[in-house]
Length: 155
Image (tube, rainbow, N blue to C red):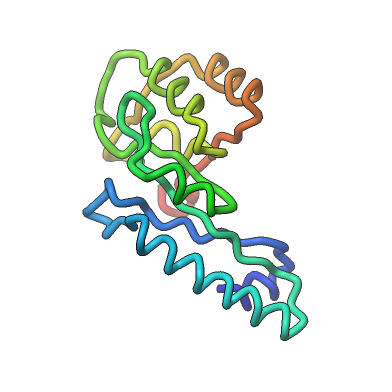
């Protein structure tokens, strides 16, 4: 992956496996996350030795519960370069979910709110919120919000 990122001219790539709360995805626990971090350090050292500019970031997509709390120890997350926080449950609610998103953004361990709507084209409509308010909170907290979509050729 690092070699292909270099070919594409990328400066960084991030490895963002799911965290332990998403067992269906074989989510990472703290111990596996630390081992992966050591492997990433070895990859980065090898890239540097080969004169590559790309750097692999240690990261995770942490599962957030509806109250915005993560499922990983803060100490383990502090060893990472990047933490995405994503909701993976209760994704079919019809009522406004603004408070859920604000709580997620206020989680001090995350830098990016991942796939906020939880939408799956032609399968799940996704959650609704006061998006201007959510984006304003993200800006105020200096956090990013992932924007994802379905490629047009799959629609």
